[in-house]
Image (cartoon, rainbow, N blue to C red; front, side, top):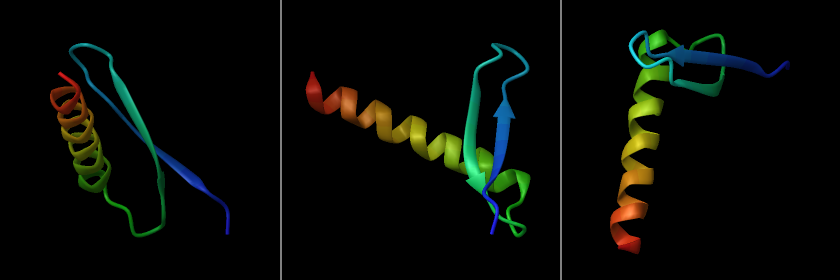
Length: 49
């Protein structure tokens, strides 16, 4: 099976997020993964401070 890439781009700051998707992936799934990744990175920064 071919790996597909989904991408979300912020229309305000032009920041983007890419992730592997399947035929069942919806746009909200990509957005949710982006938010989850932001929270994960922020928690890592908080733990390191």
